[in-house]
Length: 242
Image (cartoon, rainbow, N blue to C red; front, side, top):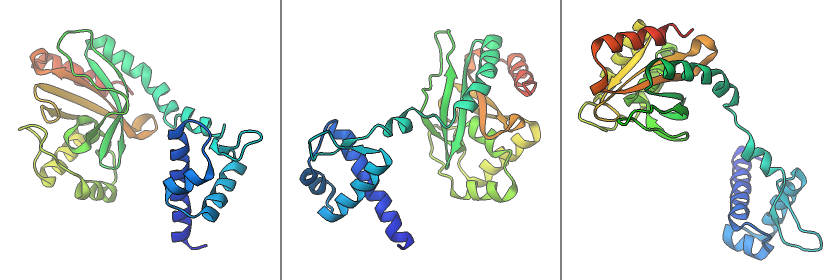
């Protein structure tokens, strides 16, 4: 089987699983083939493989198909469990020091995905949720992660990065973005002020020193609560985490 044929089979298999998951119960073969736009022999072959692996099952005495028990392993597994466990005490420490929102994020293509956060108890706040994504170019988290890349990886990331104008302060050019990242590498922390959300400054450090080069932690502070003395204290605390 060629690589293209293998890819097609994988795509069709995943489409079948998604359809069965969406139906929520036993589904007859004719409905599966009609919905998937595939032939009966192909559907039978793929469903048999998925059944053998435990991802598809058939109710006793029936010819219908439904999601199998092994799918549960995929939905409950967390590839970032160790990272979150290691980073959580850091988030708690930063939050206890400043009572501001702290975030854990990873680089995913050219976006930052938020994995965990602790929210400030103060009324004026910057809110994120696990699973939320932001363009890496506009975030302190993304710049902190990028600052630890080697030259080749960094060049590839910056050259392909989307740079949306989220606010009037958002970085506009790739040359400027690269300059911010190299500055973060030199200083040991990254920052952005009002580039993702107007009126909010974020300061971040990479978690590369503890074995997670694709991750960083940040603190997000409304500019009304961030005078220069407090800003310097935050930077000192972040740089002394490791």
